[in-house]
Amino acid sequence: MDAGLYRKEADAMLQTWWKSYFERPGLRVFWLVPAGFTDKTLPLKVEPPPGRIARILVGRAEILTPSFERALLAQKKNPEVFVTKNDRFLEAYAERVRQLSGK
Image 1 (tube, rainbow, N blue to C red):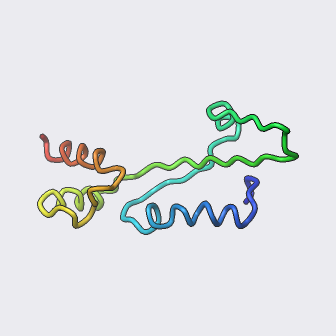
Image 2 (image 1 turned 120 degrees about the vertical axis):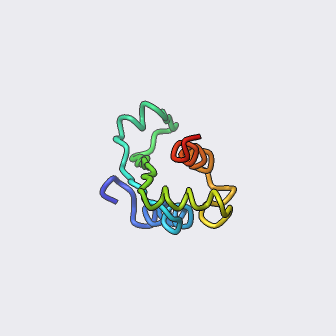
């Protein structure tokens, strides 16, 4: 809300992520991307121009903790226990397992 969203907008943004970010195992870091970067990367032109535009881009990084990596290695022997086939980071996790396994 401090970045310019109304309470309902901010809540709706969080709710869209709830299951995929907050109810999944792992550690994530979130940050608000500076408005100048957002405007440069994703230019927006609206005609007629509104009185106010609030565009909030949120960055996210997945942090692989040692316990998370151990769980990934354990899953190698028992698929579908920890990460599902449709997880968007499945390929990255598989690469990390290869690195940790020395393969």
